[in-house]
Length: 269
Image (cartoon, rainbow, N blue to C red; front, side, top):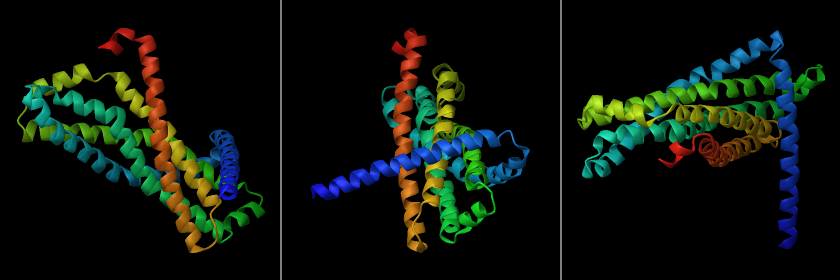
């Protein structure tokens, strides 16, 4: 038993080291490729697949998040006569936490799984080896466009999720429950700061990078056969999901510390 635990621990550390080397190489190559016009067409194609095709899913997710928050929170606030403050609760929760996290999770499921399956199939059928045999760096040709697209478009998709979440909360609060529209908007504007919106959007860069790196790495290192590709897709989604939650916690702690340092009075309110 102790031997098996030791073997698994060593394998896990070695796998983590290989992932770190892969991620470092991918980021260095991606930074160089951003200044190469030859890579723009590849990046643009991945931006269309990753970003444009994901907009409907992310928007629907954001809308239902805002609507569910309004339904769940209305009863508690109405019992205290604070139903007009419902917009503050909904909008802060959406733009700071739920919007970015759920949008990233949807991307991990839709985009991350697709990236892993595509690259995993290429790896199993030796297409990646063929690309390398032609003198082309497979990381630059296959990983860079996907990484750059995820880094650039995940924050944009989070904005879409935030907008639809706010609209969904407004619809349920004002149209369904009859809360005064002017009061709802005024309290929301007073309670939600630019810092809250910016914090959620900045998270998107880290979430997008994590999704792209984990998915591409699992695709490049998947085992042979259909079972290996399927296992890699599952591992990529689970790994991306856990990483998103971990990054969200770390980012919340760091953001709170920065806010408390520069705006100590507001942080106590």
